[in-house]
Image (tube, rainbow, N blue to C red; front, side):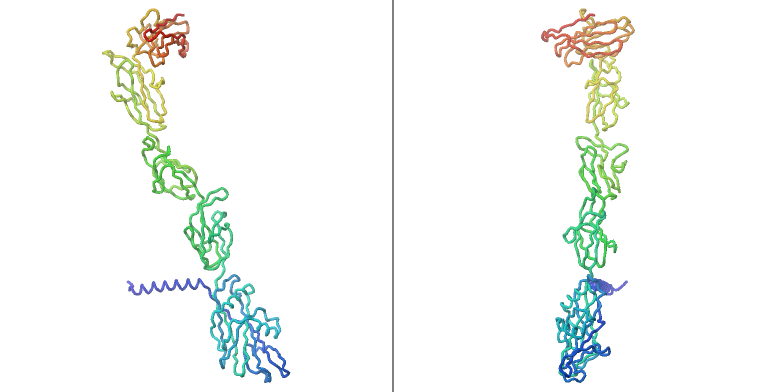
Length: 584
């Protein structure tokens, strides 16, 4: 194992190296040496006139304050123009700082020179023009000794180089001062520009869907624009959910530098660039879904979080999510899953209550298939007495145990068939055969198919066959209760439990058909009478509900009863009950 001190030193080294590389990268540096030199010497000839010449090649670089050519004039001096090639710098580089370094061949004393600006190419200029333009410039440095060395940073020099970048060339003038002796000179001067700079980079910013917009530093730009930025300068990028060409997109809070592969996450993010790049905001097509249970109640889970039914989500297209529902109670019903499909989604169906890693691709409703469970009771009502019995539900016979009805549950949309079979009851010591007459809601279908949409009760009404609680069920001669047709069929009407009943026999009265109830009132119907023709029967009775005489017709050929009609209205009070008689 490495010693702890060595480990600490290693981490310190790594941190230092990281800091150094960042600093080095954050501020680029270049040194540019001067190349071509233009030197002009001015002196007075024997006539006292200033003369100019360019020293020969051997003398270029000499800065001499001595009296040249043994003239008697004022001491001659030099103007030297130094050329720098800026082609190694980008035209759009940002100059941060500049200093100048002077390297000289040798020197003999500490006399000084001036260093100033020069803005034109001296290549096509005369000696005198070079001299004058050098003097017209402004100074970068004054009183610079011939000994040279590193000079301080100079802002004017920095600005002039910045402005010269498009021309790719730069000039500096050295002005040697007049001396009173001939001892001050220096050969082979070389100038070096030490430049710290930042390059400009072109960054193209796009959205994944190649449209829309984005923000940089709080300003909105169109996707696809190319921005010129300063190298390593930090900028804030921001984006949001957008709609483009009718399609909704969700921002993934992620940016990718397609040039370097770097990924940035957040809203917003700070990003800097060291080179030209393409920056892409990552979007996915937005899919809007509503997740709910059938009948839109209760709760469910999306990605393990519990939500109320009907929760809405905006998901990325092709993203994976978990969904779950369960049997629960809401809306007054126990909600149950059926065998088979548990979820219906826009993309597919599932047969499980828990779904993991479902890929969302299509907007719409995601519905957990919970069905309402309906509680029901089923009972028999025997008009002439009795209780219990049986009832057939979905093909299975169920026993009704008095005093409670049979009870059960059925699910929404499940087939539900109920049937009332013929059965017997013991009434006053007598075995009575009971036939189904009608359901409590008035329906006479038997068996009967129901489509429940709520909890419900169902009651079958039974009539004792050839049974009446009325001692004069077939009495009163003035109103015939029995009619025999020409084909020998016997038809009979009678009272039982305040209702009018019809039956027939084709074997001379040995057996009789199941009774049909003729009235539909809520009060007493009594005193029936029957008559007939070859193909029609007529039955009349007194209806105490509205105190009318009713008439119904029966088509013998089609076995069809017609609706009851009022043929007379009588009102003798409750004490008098008319007994109508009919004959044809």
